[in-house]
Image (tube, rainbow, N blue to C red):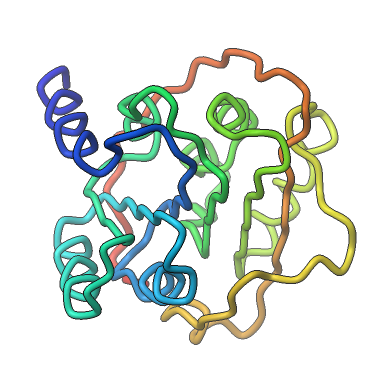
Length: 207
């Protein structure tokens, strides 16, 4: 694990030659959404992570074909990515689109969006940073809504705040319906939270 973290830091160093804010997509799949986002907002530095090497390879091809110097894809687990971020890099926007819902109750602990993970994100997100969450799992959506009131570092935005970019992913195209949530980072200091990177296989489908 130590070697894996060292390798990840080596990959991140040239991407962040200086402190700055980034747009981060967790579970980027084949890069369909983030590649379009980077093209629409060339002034923003975009980074997507996924556990599957094949997905990252295909995502990198997209950014290379589009000559998107502001779009990067890295094979990494979300928690390890946070721990490897160079000092001064902040998360201005966080995107979590159709994450694995782990529908069985005994597997809920594997869901990426948990209270401890939100606290970890808060340590890297400045006040007014946004987190965009979309899922076709009503149970997952309600679970996140259920623990949000207890969080002091994140709150829902005003009703009617627009979704910055609508670009249909493979999962979104397959979904009969879905629900979306926009969260904003409050000014409350982040509370250190111990989170353990789950050692779980990625889902078979791709975004």
